[in-house]
Image (cartoon, rainbow, N blue to C red):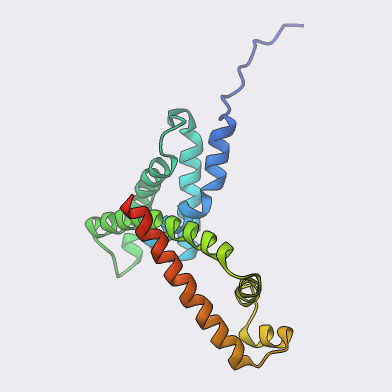
Length: 183
């Protein structure tokens, strides 16, 4: 019986790469969606982008900006997608416009991340009853009517409270962002 030559296993990404890859799927999808405008097309481009990212994992340097690296790959995949779909669609945007939208998407993601972080901190500063009201109102599938019924309060009262809390959160977020930009 002849012995088989040793077959090398393909390289495997390190755990940190896998975590970065997994943690940033939503941001990558939203970045692509901002450029293609259609959720189904965005899913298709995301899958193609993921294949490229995964195949090039060994080119990514841990410690550098994974989002910027993956967005660059996504931008190329969006351009390829657009080229494939160009003949089938009447409305086609220029590569320059798509590039501008991609850049704005990246910049807005950073701003949204700062706003989300500020919102989390401001929510923690709310009185427990106010925080509970906001969590109930913005729970998936919830409505103002549901919250009012659950709390045994008139709907108008609930809406007034939510309006007051939202204004308070808005002001808190703006203060946090102003403080952070000054530093």
